[in-house]
Image (cartoon, rainbow, N blue to C red; front, top):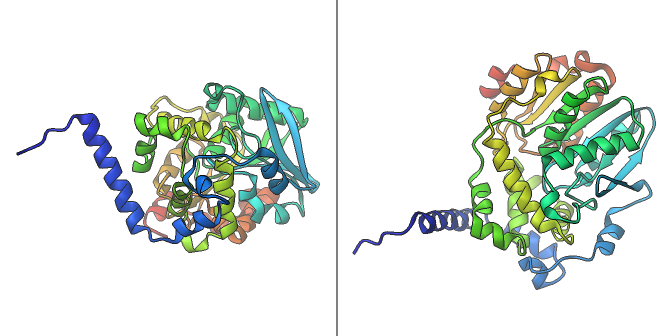
Length: 351
């Protein structure tokens, strides 16, 4: 006898089947890493949070500062001297994603890496419903003003790249150079895992429970080569996910990304006047390199470097190569990296 499921049940069964197949096909490395990253079974299952004081003890250092703006207490680290550059991480990450860049850039620049609004030790506003892309942008702008920075360079990855581009479009005279690494921002197809996470029953549960193994699996998926992930990276992503109040903000982030991907209103990026370097992982399954064409159409002076084996976070996956290109661009602009840039057509051909 044929069984007729409602569309709701059909979608749930399809998404759960995809999840099971993906977990089964991904091996046990991420599962094992998640177990090593959590102190208790309840942490591993995603039922509990880690004390904020414990996270601060682990993820602050002598360069750490905190500043209150727009309802957020922003954690940032400030080192080096010279022209300032702000490093802006992507979704579910923290400022430590830039550890492979900071030391090199600080030789010639004042380097400010922050936990973006909603993530890391910054966290979100008291009411999670107040967290959206506009509040994050306003808080970042207030942060720059609080530090009294009249002119600054920005490097942003993923959602951080989108916020950096929005800031540069809103403040064209205040951004000298702009680096965007696999940025969100234009309409696109989104990964199936995003559809699962924003599916109402799953999203409701996700406000309270997000298993550590789901976090480590996701990290495997966003790397081009999961063998490059270090255990400390697994630990950081899991522990930041278990910061008090993080889970509902993560769900709101996924809904925000989904809404942005389905928004066909023209973005304001034509107003960007800063020299702009696009850096992209050729194996990015979240924001494919084909979308670089939209950025290059709106920012005619933009140039593109592709890292064929990297995924969505190339500065974390290939820190030495990417920081070398970034440092040259920040110091001398396009002329310093001209031999590394390629056309979109070359990128799509795998050059």
